[in-house]
Length: 408
Image (cartoon, rainbow, N blue to C red; front, side, top):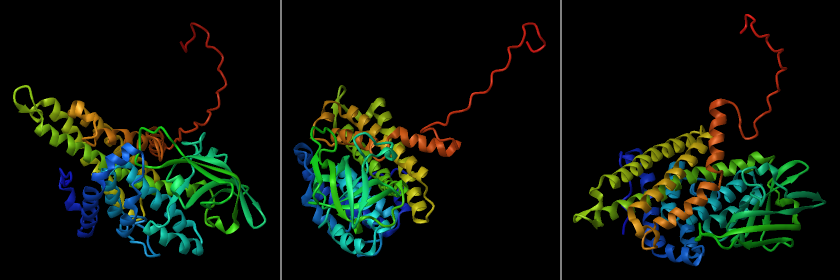
């Protein structure tokens, strides 16, 4: 069934013709190509690689990057792409987000001209796939604690360590790997088949099953010196990549929320119960739908303003934290409420709700957990970072005041 969109407060009036065209093109792609196969992909725990060539032809990889044959779309258009893809499935949006924001972007922003010429065109078409190696088995929210190292030996860099929860890991032709060096954290391009580089898939997932999640290993992994991203000068460059991805996630969360809301709304109109009336006439059901449409609308306006700020060069990392934190939370709550409205039908794959509910649990955690983004916002509004709260020196104890003195 064609998705009509969710627009309670004339959100479309904020979009220009090109933005609407981009959104509607991807919306049609999701309706016609993704929806018919995504439940099967979820059940089989496989990435729908058959869609990659068409997504490349549509210019969905690195859509907001310029040059090298890339589309160079504005960031609202890019966000709308992420929204529609996640309406299809969070795993599909993750694939495109990792390819563009976490792999193409660091090459585009921090790579040499040779690296850009070699990798950006084939990654834009989907002929080459990338992955982003930052998170480690023992370090997620604290990437600065990474143990993966790289040391220079002549004309080579030698990598040792491991990365975990890596989207597209076993599919990737090239991995963007972040490692500690004597010069600080640097980014490296590690190609598939390099001796000492291994990858294996994470099994047993109940979430993001239509996405490939992997572990990467590096044991005396030697790569040419020119495979280092020359403009990376610290962990801040890796975090810049994450902010690109988090921006897209803020839009993507809305897509999942919209699909849950639309499914619950239509179901409530058709489900007849008790007095021969649709459950949509009941106050409790309407309250749930009201919450969803209100929060989705607020999330749309937040995402749109983020896009405007990003295009004008004013978007800050704490703005992105608010967008990712809020809109993924809206998706999580919308999935829960939709499941309640659908009752028992909410847990079967005849409807997309339970799949979105499972997926959003991962999205709620990755690219910065809900709580960590709360601390980012808290640090900005108070001026006091609470990640590792500074120790306050103890004041020297005063002499006890005698009982009965004037100070009593």
